[in-house]
Image (cartoon, rainbow, N blue to C red; front, side, top):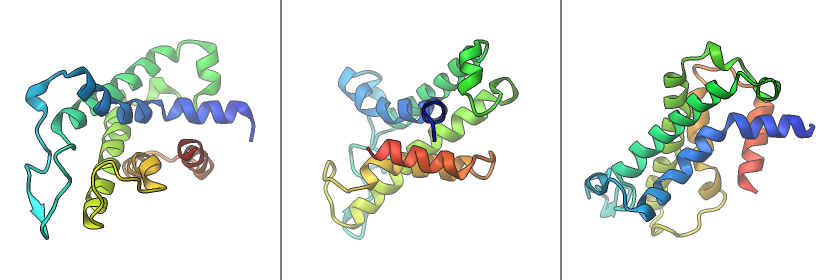
Length: 165
């Protein structure tokens, strides 16, 4: 494994990284307050919150929009030789909306899935849940992308390792 491969993995997964950063940043910025509504609508499942009040439509929607926008930017950057060298695929040949939705929607799904699991384990929001706090969105992106895009297992393993640390 060389540095170019590691850089390529990070570049490939950039949309998911931005997706994962968006919910807390949008909360801190206080934008789109009308979307600050819990995804689970405050519902409980066996006397425990389904996801929790901190998992909001604002975070999910903005995360997907930001992640998809990053893919569009990657398409634009693909004109440069260096970007072509570190890219795993030809960004001109993908539908950026489909790829963007899958990678960012998958990242959001992974976060929500593990929030659901944490609530079942009676862990409060913000409680550490290693290693899943670090890789939940990687698992979600993997689940959403794998049926549609053939991505080498070495890429996924590298992303899991890099994201965990």
